[in-house]
Length: 94
Image (cartoon, rainbow, N blue to C red; front, top):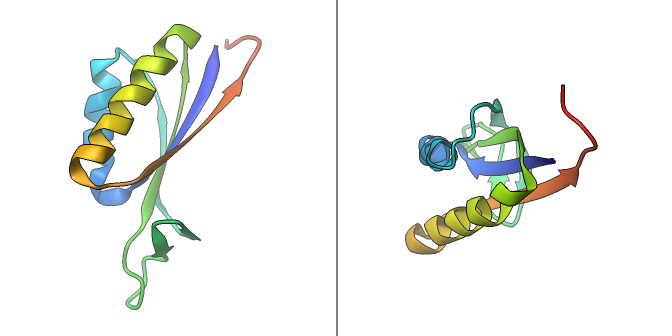
């Protein structure tokens, strides 16, 4: 099993939810309105830097990972958006 973390522009969160649903991901945790600085710019939710990100965490089977990663990558390339992903291995989920 794997923990998948995805950081997405907040305005793209619904598209990510659709992608996860398409891959039968039956649960996730979202942290909306995340602030930070990265390759996509400054996201502080302020007047000067109004954009924010959403951070999603989900636990998936290892055999789901390649297909989910491919769909997210294809979506980002098609619309010019950025999503960042990180994966951690876990021994068990209960």
